[in-house]
Amino acid sequence: MTPALLSILEPGSQAVVRQVKGDPSAVRRLMELGLVPGTSIELVRRAPMGDPLELRVRGAHFSIRRTEAERIHVDVDSD
Image 1 (cartoon, rainbow, N blue to C red):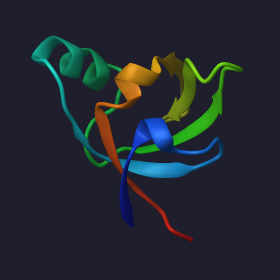
Image 2: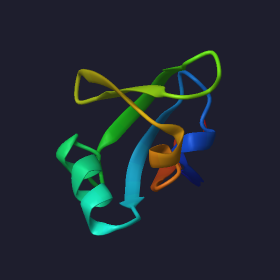
Image 3: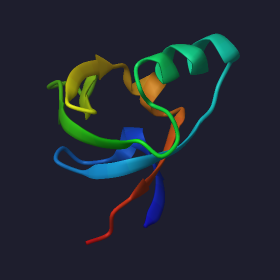
């Protein structure tokens, strides 16, 4: 597994959340969405201008801003 930021992954990439950084309220919001350490996620696609990013987490789809994705450290499966 290779460490990276969620914001730099390519569409279709799968990773595991390693850490969420930032101010406590932002971290809490992201963790409430299911982005907790150990969770598998997939970057489904990016909007045409690169923001927002669509994620699949535990079967649910949602979008987050690129600035939020920069707070999420992941381990990328390097297959």
